[in-house]
Image: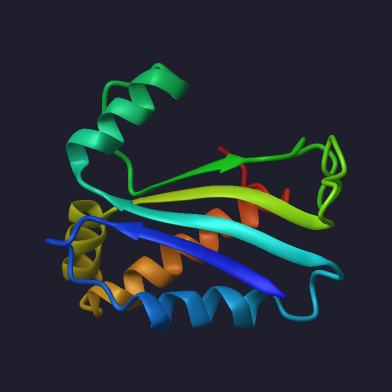
Length: 131
């Protein structure tokens, strides 16, 4: 079973079910155990705060991923959970950044959020891009 925990401020109008379905579809066939991850939609102030705290970067970004396991060991958590659920981690998306990028790309905001979430998911799975 794939469980997606979703949190957003009420003033950010996102289609949670569409985003959750995209994540579920992306994970199907790629994971063999029960999986859980969380998606959080935040504002630029909170994203800047997270970047400051964890990356020493005084700026906002469009997406951050916080893996729950050692990313050098894809899909293998550091400690096996007694309930058998693989907790991948957290994906944080800046709603204002998603709106800006959607406008630039002439696409729907929810489509941009899905793109950013799936990008973050790849990081949680241990797949990284060159900086």
